[in-house]
Image (cartoon, rainbow, N blue to C red; front, top):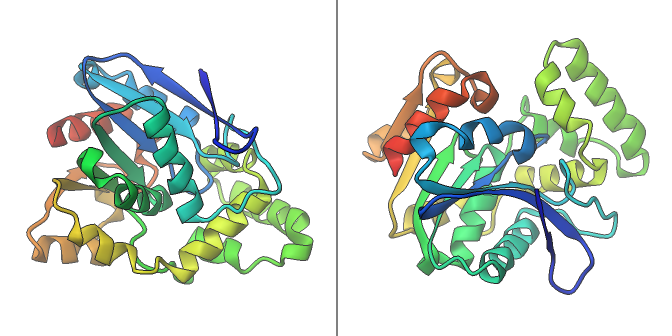
Length: 253
């Protein structure tokens, strides 16, 4: 694992950097997740061996620092990731974003569009989050009681049997989960969907078969976008079936 110190701060982003001769793939995880948990198995699959793979833990999550004085907005995450790309001297990059990490990926692409070779989005957030989603639930918490209320939410998810996700959610700074969730409910300005469909580089969309039917999937079909479906998995497909996720990613390369 490596460290990157954010510009104008002492905050450290931690990441894996796996060798490969072809264009680097930057993996951006979603809410409550961590690249170090979700995407190491994916990155090590033989079908991706030719590509360099950069697997990050966003600030506030996983092994990365969790400063309490950082503003954990989607745009703020995209800003330091753009600087990260500049500082490790990537000339071209393939950006992969899952779930709310998809919104971060879209904002990142807005900042460095000339460096983007392809964008791969896995069941992304591109519109404001609605009731029934984890981000909507986190956004309803009260900031003054954030620690205790987040602990109760974690316990609820644990009791529901969602133990894999809970294992990484527990390592999130509650403020980080709350603030990016508030951002998710507000949506992008301009909207992430608008920005996405204005991009000129190739874009691909991945869905889990168990997530279907899905209105975003249907809209993408109507737009004749490049869609891939991973069989027999749902939203958390990276650890449900990393081999097939890697295979589908390789089909996009």
